[in-house]
Structure formats: structure tokens, C-alpha cells
Image (cartoon, rainbow, N blue to C red):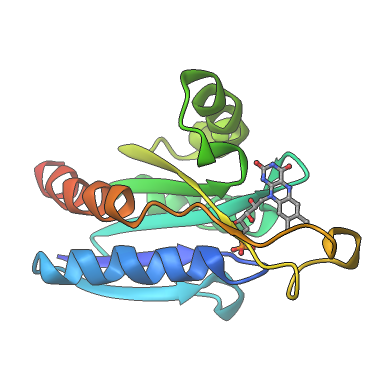
Length: 160
Ligand SMILES: Cc1cc2nc3c(=O)[nH]c(=O)nc-3n(C[C@H](O)[C@H](O)[C@H](O)COP(=O)(O)O)c2cc1C
């Protein structure tokens, strides 16, 4: 099975999660390409796709939404999953799941996913915008949860 993991990132943490998802899926026997959306990956020729981005000022990354909109015809013909990083999801509560999950609704309407992974994000003030320079660094990415999600996803892709 050939899988494309396509992501958009501003400060790098979503890219690292995409790489981790790729690593886990490769260990499960999939052939995986991990690509930054800015490098214009093309989902044609893949059997499945994982598409990810992060939340900034309560909005899901427009580059990720744009990728799904541009490639909706191709993506509709294969199993697709979305993942999203946010500060909010450092607390995995039903309310936060609903709050962040709903940000992906427009994308879900375009191409329905087989699964959505919502994870805590990471922030490094030395890389971030000046207005956030006084905030402290944080990394709330739960690598075990990310790996478990990617592992389950491979089975979901196969049964589709
Ligand atoms: C400028 C900025 C704005 C953000 N706004 C939000 C927000 O409104 N809600 C939220 O839950 N997380 C917010 N975050 C947290 C990011 O979603 C999180 O840091 C994510 O891991 C960033 O991904 P990246 O490193 O791939 O760019 C914000 C982060 C930054 C840097």
C-alpha cells in the first residue's frame, strides 16, 4: 500500500508529527511519502492519504484546507484521514475535541475522512511570532497516542 502523508506547518511541529506517522506506517509495511504541502505533493497514484495541519488563532491552517480542496477529486477515490495539532488539545476533553474537531468540518464536507486525529501541539517562542515571544516553550505532543493512531489507521486503510 502506497500512502501519502501531506502536511502544512508554520513552525515545524506538525512536520515532525507527519514524519512520525510515516515512520509508524512504514514499520507496518506501507510504502510512505511524507511531503510538505508547499512542495506541491500530488496524491494521484497513492492508495491512501493522511493530511495534517495545525490551529492558529482558532483557524485550521488554510494551506491544508487548500490542498484538500484542490485535490478533492483524487482524494474522494481513496481512504483519507486528517490530523490536527493545537494548543487546546493538550487537554483531551470532549469539549476540546468538539471545539477543535469542528474546525475541520469544511474539509470533512469536501472529502469525508475515515478518521481524524486530534493532538496537542508544540510551541517554541524563539521560532514563533514576536507577539508570542514572552510565552514559555511547550511541547504537548503525545507520541504514544500519535503512534497508536497511525498504527490503527493502516488497518482502517486496508479494510476500505
Ligand atoms: C501564532 C500562533 C497561534 C496559535 N493559535 C492557537 C489557537 O488559537 N488555538 C489553539 O488551540 N492553538 C493555537 N496555537 C498552537 C498551535 O496549534 C501549535 O503550537 C501547533 O503545534 C503549531 O504547529 P506548527 O509548529 O506545525 O506550526 C497557536 C500557535 C501559534 C504559534
